[in-house]
Image 1 (cartoon, one colour):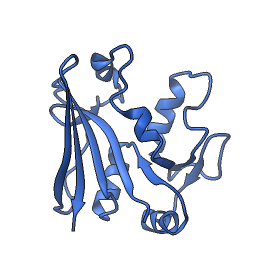
Image 2: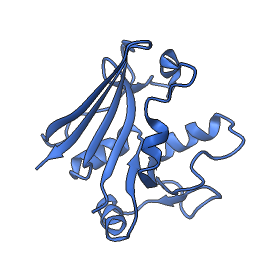
Image 3: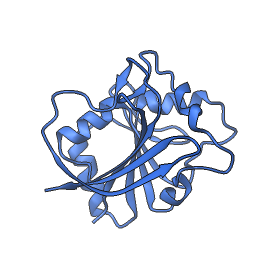
Length: 177
């Protein structure tokens, strides 16, 4: 069965961005030639789920080409419908979308935020694996990766990787049912 995998970075104090969606703190761990396993991870997925604000943030980077042209991309939105040249906007029930995707053949399903999407997926117990890169930085406030109000879930640590040059720690968890 296709798994839903959260692959995301957060500050040591649990934030994925500042209140105004600034993610500059992520650049603190950039090192030439180091992608923290991102390229290898991308080979395991063929579908992407993002929130609208995350999608708009990616577009604001001004890249010459959308970075996931080789994947089916869904952007969860209550304000946009249809599709553009990169993604399909989805405003329906998240459980229905995940159920339909899991019934299709393919690789795993990649979720990269934002906070509302992660909350919704966790609330419905739809995330199977979490790969979280912890940036050695205390942001102080902002958009939390894990919002309050989701059900308790037991996880099993399957891997931990340390990157001494940058201080980044990557934690891999499977949801244990």
